[in-house]
Image: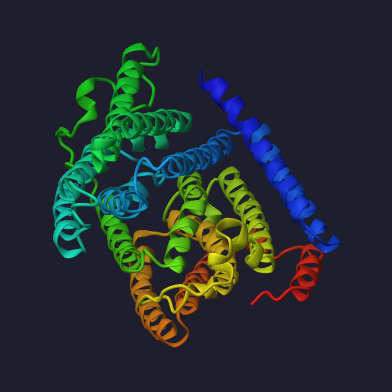
Amino acid sequence: MLNFLEDFLFTGAKTLVALAVEKLNNLAATPPERQLCRKFSTEAFQFVIHHGESNNVLASSAMSASYNMVLQIMFRVMTFLLNAFILRNRYVTEDMLGVVNVRLTLLYSTILFVAREAFRRACLSQKESQKWQQTINLIWCNLPLGIISGAVFGFVWSTQLETPDPDVIPHYHLAVIIFATSALLELLAEPLWVLGQAFLFVKLKVLIEGIAIAGRCLLTVVLVVFFPQLGILAFCFAQLCFTFLFVGLYYLYFLRYIIHSPKKDDEFPLKKIQDFFPRRIPNEPWTSYELALLTWSFFKQGFLKQLLTEVLLIKGSTTPSTTWLVRARFIFLPIEESGYLFFAQTLIRDVDVNKQPKESIDLASSVLKCLLKVVVLIGVIIWVFGAAYSYLLLDIYAGSLLSTEPVGVTNYVISLRYCPTLLKWFSFYVLLLAINGTTECFVFAAMSQEQVDRYNKKMLLFSVLFLISSWYLTKTIGSVGFILANCLNMSARISHSIYFTRNYFKDSCYRPLRGLIPSWPVSCVMDTVISGHQVF
């Protein structure tokens, strides 16, 4: 079945690229725009085919990670269609769907991010000598951390945020408890998830998440259509279904693997059921002190980023600018996650570039350069077409409501009549987001623990500047200022990533940052298209 899934997703990747190129060519109105599309198609197909034909184990893991990107995009489309079906047939109200998709999903993702992200980043790093029982012991520490964060964030969501009208959306507080519980239960599978990623069971992750998401979507439709009286609880039960499938399938797979695997003496650390759980190691520390310090460094960094971004999203979740920023994060999140997995498994952390295995550093450099070229081309196309056709896109999406007519006023939005201008700047922000996600996934995989700590101090400075610029620009020019503040924040982080990457490779012959520079035909086409339209 996994071989079938591999063939299906590889074919799907090429098909999606072909469809994207066809649609962009149909939308392109001028010869320069069509030339830009042709350039994108060439780079994209080379990227897909190059990784598809590689026999290298690490390159195979990168290709498997790309399957994950394609599958996540497919299931996000499935979720979008599910929401459209529910709204079009009026099974639930827009307010209820908004509470589920924004507020409750934000609670769920925040608990998981705080409880597990630092452990994932630290434990997936390649080490010259790594004792996996110590690593498993450390990973299980995310459960008490999840209980604490679940209690804190659950209290905030229940008491400190505005409570929906109980006549319109009943059982809100129960829904908060269920979504928080779902996040805690999902942490039970975290040691197996990390082991699966570290030992390149990437197809397993795709398959299990695919089954779990499909089960959640199917149960949501059944409960919403046949039991509409459940209201918001229908989404809660579907979320619990996802969690039970996710955790159960991981344990069933690895239980079957250790029972039926013929390799009893291989390096895979799970030999018996007891190895799934934390336990004492004779004459060894309970966990690795070095790994614990690295986890703590990543935790401080991730907590600060999450606190700033999620608080702003909660406060402005009804505005077009923050809504679009949420969507943009979901677009490139699979690329960032898969890129970090690849670089973390390829590079040995805290080892100089000239002391890395030559095959690994060759592959890491070429993949980074190729990824940068692809995301820059994707970002440029989104920027050019999004800026040039902002009025048309908004008119197709929502008629004249967003493209011409002024509507209400909120704290962050002066008027929705500025949506075309917002979309133009948002298109540029997507380009910066694409570059930042790719460069940072390499930087965080290559940094030592001391470098991560130093970066956290810089991140604090970036955050203060972001808050000040967000407050000032939003107050001065409205919603556009919020996106501009995010652009400034992304530019600062990109500058730091470029500085680190340049210093990392400065004593070697590798120059992966050249992938950021578009070729002269692309630059000429981009200049022609931009000069022919009012981009800003």
